[in-house]
Amino acid sequence: MIMSSAEAQILRTVLDRWKSAVDAHEPDRVASYFTDDAIFQGLHPYSVGPAGVAAYYAAQPLGLTAAYDIRETRRLSDDLVLGYLEVEFGFTDRPPLTVNLGVLLRRQDNTWLITHYQVSNPT
Image (cartoon, rainbow, N blue to C red):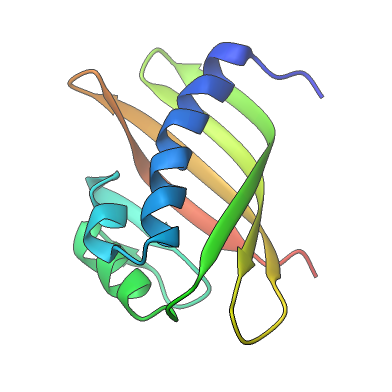
């Protein structure tokens, strides 16, 4: 796997914030890391924009945690970075769920935000 450290660092900066908010069960903070027109596809029907992201994470159980591993990165343009990850969501009352996650980050006003988020089940 060839991975640029610059792109991986951009992903880690955004995804560490996302993880922190998911782990703390702070859905509005999770949503603040998404663009106003972000396409969000968790394991339920998709939504567009931060309000849908917040609603999705508000519905998740308390104690949900996220651990991620970056598998691939691509710089698509100066202001777009693609990431492909493996994410393990942990629960307090059942076994963890491992999924694939594709994200597209867009730089807006010198801040990187998630503009596309798509989960897929690896099975």
